[in-house]
Structures are given as structure tokens and as C-alpha cells.
Image 1 (cartoon, rainbow, N blue to C red):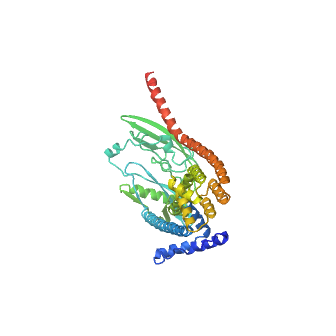
Image 2 (cartoon, helix red, strand yellow):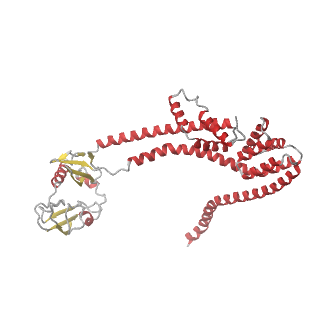
Amino acid sequence: MYERNNPKKQKNAQSRRFKSKGRGKYKNKPSGKITEALVHHVPVKWRMALAGLIRKGRPLNISQLMGETEEELRRLISLGTKLLTLAILLLMGGIFLSDGSRRESREISRSSDGETLRIPLVLREGEEKHRMILEIGPEEYTDEELFALAEREFAKLEERMRGENPGLREISTDLTLPLKTEEGKLEISWQSSDPEILNRKGEVSRDALTEPRIVILTASVNAGERQVKKEFSCRVLPRERAFWEKAKDDLRQMEEAGRTEPAFTLPESVNGISVEREEKREPDRLAVSVLVIFSIVVLPVAFRILAIRREGERRRDEMKDGYFRFVNQLSLYLGAGLPVTESLRRFSVSCREKSLREETVFTLNRIRSGWSEPEALTELGRNIGLPEYRKVLALVSQNLYHGSHQLLMLLSEEEQEAVNIKKERTRKKGEEASEKLLLPTGLLLLTVIGIVVYPALVGM
């Protein structure tokens, strides 16, 4: 039973009904049992908040409101569990596919367009490891095919030949010597003054070096019968041989020997040193998984709740638009000698605002079911939720038994206040409409200016 005089008892009774109403509908379904268990553990505070959003959207009595709230909770929880299951399945599928792709990553397809692939590798022996870049050259072509690919772009000669070295005066790793000019139309041949240290391929061998050595590299650019030569003085630095040096040389030799094959397969190890392909760093899987689950599960549920909230806001705006008409007609009917109930009935017949008409009819039904007029009017103001309605309905409720003369004077003052509120609301709507039209008006102005100015500029 609805507790009218004790708000605390009313709230406790309402909380118990929220937890118990409508559970039998889903209890025989497996998914319904899970949903029912989750609904049972939803805090009462959340239930009350959702009920408040639903009540703002349409008039409902306590029993209807509790039932609608329970149904909405089930819909939201059912939607969330389905989306969570879908997100987990998608993540598991993505992990399975990514694992499958890694198992095939040891086979590297050569480029068919003349480009050299640079593959990062990890050479490992026990706890020691070293990273290197292995260049996977393109498939070799006939002279005709090579001439057809001569239009490929290359970097400038001085920049490319340095490779990973800071300069030609401090060479510690292999040079990258291009075989064509930047335009790709002419061939370049190389000669070395000391191929034992730095050969014409740019490969550096520093095993025999105990001090820096100067090596002259001569680049010959062939242009028909003419030949242009340029010498580069290269200073090669000595170094100690590391565990990975021999493995690097062997890997390069293996790659060069297999350039006639369409793909190069990395060996598991070279001379006892393991070879692993260095994968690109991926984002934190846990963070990505949480973000994906949040996007799939939480956002649709949040959009559903926002839709309920927007319906309440639309209803609130509609109530504000009908306030002046409500006060005006209520004052007119009461001034004609009609009782409050009949005044509300006639207003509900002529009311244009659907939300306000529904609340008025809902209040009339309460009065017919036994509610007193003051209590029903006070509850009407509380359900509408706007201070101006609560004020005028409180005036009517308090002056029901004191005669209509004083009430009509108060309603007349409130009607004048309603006129001011309507003017202010109309002014704000006009400002909002002007702001929305500002951008199209500016674009139209720029278009007109362009149409006017363009002929003048063309004729100058």
C-alpha cells in the first residue's frame, strides 16, 4: 500500500518492491537466470536513479514505475552481457589469428618492384643478444626487366653510401653503395683501393685492422660513351670482433646465395647463435582489451541511458512551453466558478502539449481513485519537477478552502510572471537560432564575395 504520510517507510517499501517485482518472467531461461541474479544485486540507489529518469519521460504510478524500472534493468543488463560475450569472442579470435601469423613470419617474400627490404633481427647466444638489420634484396631481373625498373627513385649518393655511419671519416659498419643514380636512369660502378678492408659492395671487414685506414672508393657514372668519376676518401676504424660478427656475415652470404628464390627463410640458428625476427612493438594488450570491452559494452548501455535522459529533457522543455497556457486557462476556469477538478479536466481536453496533458489526466485519475485534491495537486507539481508549476499548484492547493477571490488575485500575478517567463524563453530560442544560422550566413557571404570579385580579378 502506498505510504502517504511517512516518506521513510514509503522509500523502504518501494525498495523492497524494486527487488521483488517481475522476477518470474525470466527464471526458467538459463540466460534469464543470469540476468535475474545480476538484477538482484543492482544497488537500490541505482534503481532509484533509473526510475527517476523513466518517470521524467512519462506518467506512471508506483506499481507501473517499479515494473518498468525492473524491465529496463533487465534490458540493459541483457544487452551488456551479450556485448561482453561478443567482445571476448572477438578478442580471442584476434589473438588466435595474430598467433597464427607469427608462425609464418620466418619466410620473408622478396620485393618484386626492385626495393630492398630491411629486416630487424636479433642474434642470441645464451644471455647475450645483438640486434642487426638484414637487407633482403629484390629478385634479380634480366637486363630488359632491370631497364624497365630504372625509374625508381633513390636518395642522393652521398647520403645513401654512408649507411648507418655518422660520416665517411668514421666508418664502422657496412656502406650502402647504390648501383643507380637518383633518377634510376644511369648505372653506377664502384672500385676500391683496398677491397680487403672495404670492397666495392660496401662491405667492411675490420678483422685485420689495428689502426684506422684510408680507403679510396671511386664511383663511375656511365652516360653513354662518357664516363664521370668521383673519388670518396673513406676512413675505416678498427674494432674488436663480437660474437655476432660471423653470424652477420653468414646470414648475408646465405641471403645473397638465395636471391634467385622468391622468398628467404630465416634459419633457426647460425653457428650456434639463435636468429629471431624482431617484431614491431605492439600496444599494451591489456589496455587495448579494456578499451575494446569498454567501447563494445559500456557505450551502448550509456547511449540507452542517455536516450532516456534526453526524453526527460524533451518533456521538460515541452512543459516549460505550456506553462503560460496552463496558468491562463486555470485562472480563466476558476474565475468562471468551476471547481479545480473540472478546471483541470477542461484544460486536459484543450492542452496542446502531450506531456502536460498526460500528467493532468494522470492527476485526475488519482483524484477519482480517492486522493484528496490538495494532495493530488502537490504530487502533480512534484512529478512535473519545474519550480513554476510547483509554485502555482501550491497556491491552488493552499487556497482551496479559503474562497476563490484571493486565489484569483494570486493567479493573476502568477499569470503576469508567466508572460515574462514566456518572453524570456522566446528570446533565448531566437538567440540559439541566430547562432545556428551564423555559419551558413558567413559561407553564403563568402560565396557572394567570390562571385563578385572573381570576374574583376580575371579581367586584370
